[in-house]
Image (cartoon, rainbow, N blue to C red; front, side):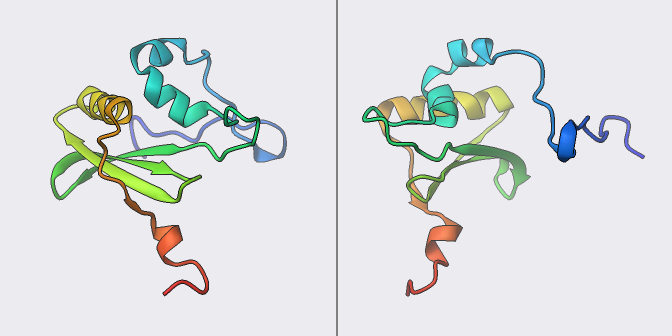
Length: 113
């Protein structure tokens, strides 16, 4: 049994409860990334699928994958710390400089060659 890993508390029907806090500190530090992760509607009111981040230790060290589920694309960044990863994503979103690739889901859609 791990020292730091435990089963998260769940609510009715096994739905996980969100951690306390409204994310305002994260939003203040990384506003573009926060918007990308949480904004549920486009300017015209059309609903959008929110994005996700995955942080992992990969072949190139500490890495983060940002998945734009709406556009079916992914971008990777590397860094020495989690803060480095978040800064790289924030800067990449602000400057439109992330190296976007087609997501796995988009590559394997039925009918796509």
